[in-house]
Amino acid sequence: MEDKFYYSISEVAKEFNVTLPTLRYWEKEFKMLQPDKNKRGVRFYKKKDVEIIRQIIYLTKEKGYTISGARNILENKTQNDTDGQLLQNLIKAKEMIVSLKEKLKIED
Image 1: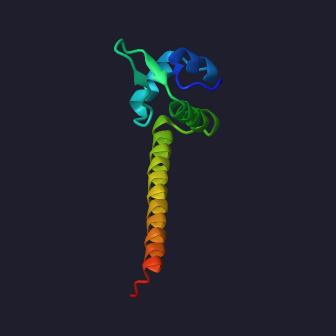
Image 2: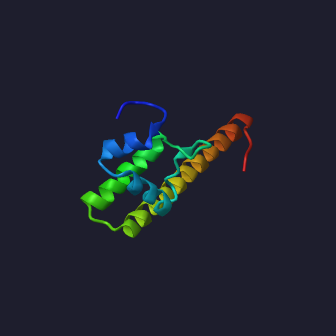
């Protein structure tokens, strides 16, 4: 897929060899899949949406998961990613506090 900011539903369907109704159905089943829509309802998929579709196809067609199973995996992955990012932010904050403490020479 060429590197663009947005892809049409037909471009995405052609890239992954799926139908337009399949993509619309997946939007209902996978809450993290939310392409932008204009006033007329025309969908515009971002790179993150395309990656989610790639993962859905991998899980359902290659690994044999049901839609429900794939959804559970992707929801848990999203939660784990969020938890991991939160942990990284907390570690950075602690490092900053320790650094400031050292600069100010504050003792416990």
